[in-house]
Image (cartoon, rainbow, N blue to C red):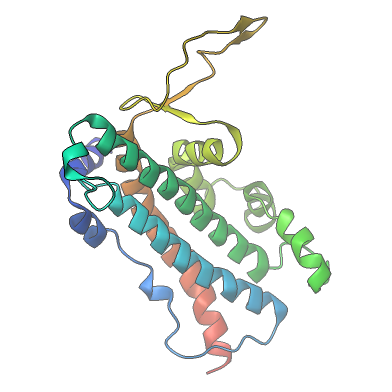
Length: 241
């Protein structure tokens, strides 16, 4: 693991083009022919496979863009003389990549949810679809598909990348990060009350660390999708060849 981390850390100096090249796309899931699913479950499963391909491609693009040295297409060269110009844009590409990668993992969970009918005996009617989706969670998939056995690819992936999922959830649902590389805004106050200190509730992140972890996340997510989604994708295609 130490050697792997070291090799990734060396890639911090990559250009956007180099980063985009080493981030493998999910082309192995693209349909070669038109596939006509015949059941509601296969239809919803195939839609989410397509969504996975689109979402990981967006995440891949955002992560690669975070390696840009300068953003002269966004700012004038004469204004490009301080740390703000690099860190400001870099952080938003990375924050966007975090959310898109997290969404990509959610798509894998939803593929399993529909393919194996983990929602139970609820009829897959139009007016039931949102209810069925709301019930989809990693804990229920562990219970229903893997019988709470921790030796499964979903649990192993999630445990390897708890920090990435926590960062993404915080961005989506909880609070803004305090970037240790560049402070977007400074709070000139501290609020202390019973059991509360405003300074201690801040979440500090380092952009280079997020980059490194997302490189690893991308690689592992591609591996996970090959293991779980290729058999599902092929089973839908095989029915209708």
